Image 1: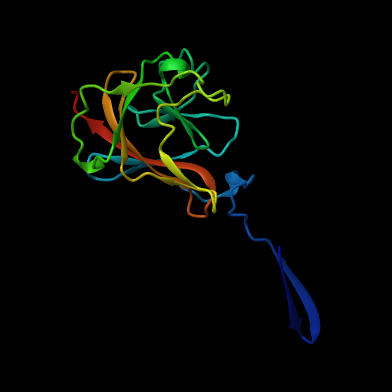
Image 2: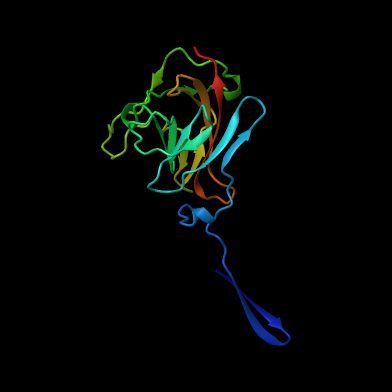
Length: 197
């Protein structure tokens, strides 16, 4: 809270203003001005921003329709491909769903140069192996963590190629975890269809 003492007509006046919290634990994410939705990049790719700020709720995304979807039972639903909760991504495959979604993790590849999906190397979400209570999400390695600032930053040289529930292939690169005000949980990713292997 900011307090400013002014002198108006010889009489002291106190103005009080509140500044928004841009730290990593903002509980008023609904009040932020972050854009949500899709932006066509004009090159066959789309940049999508999802509000995944809620600590309990997953946001589900379907690639073919380029839209968020409501999912009653994520483990049996065929209506989603990719979901986010805060910094966690999950696939509709493996332990997270029955849609058969798999991903090839490509390190050091140029996002723009990828036009065809790889032939092999696909993985999916696996059961918790390190006993931290969280499944081993196939896309969990998308970020670097700065211990000094507690900021997550996307790995620029990491591209994912997903095989969707419908059998289409899409390249995906996570761009950012923060909105313009620094609020965490606004997942921004660029993606586009690629040819089958």
